[in-house]
Length: 133
Image 1 (cartoon, rainbow, N blue to C red):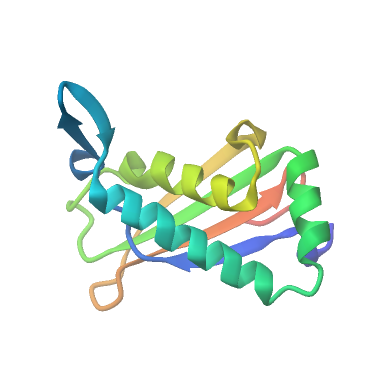
Image 2: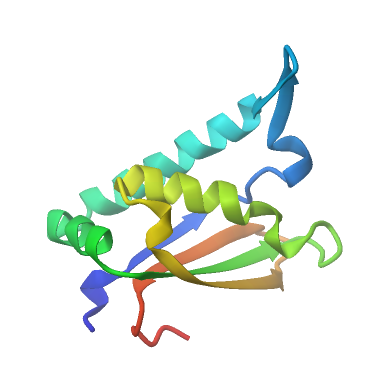
């Protein structure tokens, strides 16, 4: 498998699960913070694709293969939040930006690391069978 079939992103830490939804007129909707985060992730994906001369082939590849999503959360402290609290919003945002159905993701790897000076989320999206770790 070629590295050309991988998408690597460095993203800000997503909003915690407690800040992802709001109740408006009795309905649960994405909070403005979550909508902004999804838009920002979409911009990161589009920028990464713009830098890739093979972007259309990559997008087509992602739409037709089972995918593995690996995420490394670099947090200021290990106790700040649950490891999985940013998974769904980030997965949804990446897949929406790629125009890929998120049911293509068949394997997920989550990691929590400490970086007190530069909290961030590192993401690698690859196809199943690609040895990434």
